Amino acid sequence: MRNTLRSLALAIAIAAGSSLALPAYACGGFFCFTQPVDQSAERILYIQEGGKITVHIQISYTGDDQNFSWILPLTKAPEGGGLKPSSDSVFQLLEQTTAPRFQLNWKANGDCQSPMCYLEDAQAGGGPPTAGGGSGGVQVLLQQNVGPYEAVVIKGTSSAEIIDWLNANKFVQPKSTQPLIQQYVKDNYVFLALKLQKDKSAGDLTPIAVTLDEVGPCLPIRLTALATAPDMPIVAWVVGKARAIPKNFLHVELNDAAIDWLKPGSNYKTVVSKAVDLGSGHAFLTEIAKKTKDLPIQFASAEWDAKDFEKITDPGQFLQMMISKNLPRTTQIQNLIKKYVKKPDAYKDVSDQEYFNCIQNSGSGMPGEGKCKEYLDAAIKAGFDGAAFAKDLNELVIQPLKTIDKQYKDQPYLTRLYTTLSAEEMTKDPIFGYNGDLPEVSNQHTAEATPLCPAGSKTPNQAKLKFADGFELTVPMPTDLNGSCGNWSGPASFGKGTGPAVEGGGFALKRVQVLDEKGAALEIDQSDADRVDAQLNAAQLGTPSLKPEFIATLAKVTWNPHTSKPGTATPTPTPAAPVASSADSGCTSGNAAPTGAWLMLAGALGLVGWRRRRSQG
Image 1 (cartoon, rainbow, N blue to C red):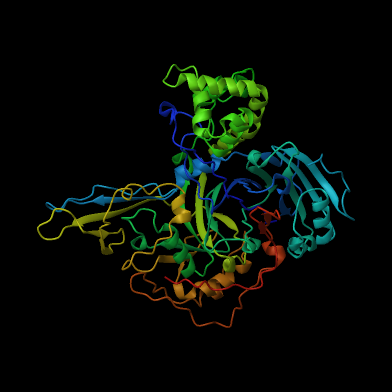
Image 2 (image 1 turned 90 degrees about the vertical axis):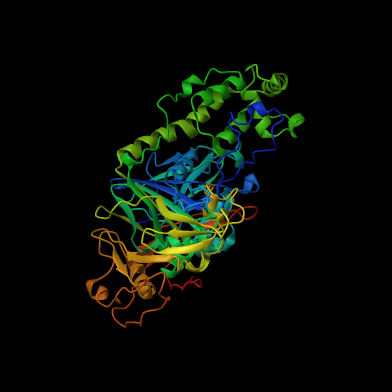
């Protein structure tokens, strides 16, 4: 019962374009500079409502529109209404609200001048196929259009039949996926497949929401090893009844002294990766765990109504209405604007930022009005269908966000979990449970800083940092603080925060724990991490993850990030480490296209082993 989805969160960033010829309109529209998106990270949102879970998946693709396809193995077909469009602003809002924040509190030190800066915001072709079409014994269990996609759910008796059917019906899949899919077929899985409708392009891609009968989230990750960068960031948000926990992965906490507080965001990903490495390579960090009532997020406005847009025939007025209603400024919205507000070839050298923002501001009487009127007239002449735009806006943005807004308010808890994984660590699929006994986790981190100046100078060349655990560390002051202090900005810090850990700060790992569905965290010594991780291979929701007789064999916790050295506990012959079967660990999904695409498949293959990560620091 533990299938679910995985996130395909390589968001396609739309370039902001060159600087505006009309600066008066630089920051008032949908094509202003937007929050950067880390394109290397996987992002997924789970919303648990009793025995049902809705998973929001961000799907992105670069390549030939005709080659786009996406396939997801499921234990059974979603019931009616189980497939719906979602919105990319969900992930943007979650990033803005939940990402880690770091603040230095500077102390006075005589005439030695502190930089008075603080670090914050580490936020971080043809019609639908017919039943029985294609090869052999493939059955079509469900077919429907979902947003820009044609969606089908199929079932077959062999992977060869499945692949042949998918390719015959233009759900393009390479033959190399055949042996990977066979295990799912053997375990009686069905397959959800998506492709673009014949009049849609990659610019129409939108996130999708899938609702299933599930008692807890699972993140299929194993076949991602086919095409992944080292230490790929994974962010999972879980909205549910209590704090979410990794059930079959370990849990780590960071040593703040390993983070470079004076070069904000420059090494956050490195520190997380090293902490996960020391936690067996299979571990998550909780970046925030809060009650939703204490963490308000407004995903939608009660004022949003597609009827307000349906009769607008002027694209400038349509965009002005969108701005006045405060609709989200995201890639998805930009793609919709570009779809319905045409940009003739005569203006191909004009940046999107200038062209569309100018149309939005036409009629304002501001400088540059003549040029804006020219752009508006060109867009009207090229054709504008306000009713169709309003329909898409309602289906792809307004209604999905209103649904999520209600679901978020109805559930008591939000948890954000983060890890990084390389190909060799993608040997089991993370399962998440809930524990109402664990404390909340804040995303706010603070440390104390004292500037230190050379004799006879008022300009500091060092800073003495004091952390919450009492550890003190003196570090050199960056030569140029401009663009460094106070600018730990956006999700890019997760994907690009690859600077070195702070020398002298100690190891990245503060502590490693087992979190289960009841009781307090079980802290274990770092030397036992691999052995415990092996025991967690067969952890299942609703039963204790570790047996008492195994817990009794664990070493005394002596790990200290400032004084210890990584080690491995003496192997204990009994109890033997369990091995997860495919039935225990099946949660799968994927994205495949043979050319120009990022191949992403996750599988439910039997766990054949695990490998210790190479990085130790």
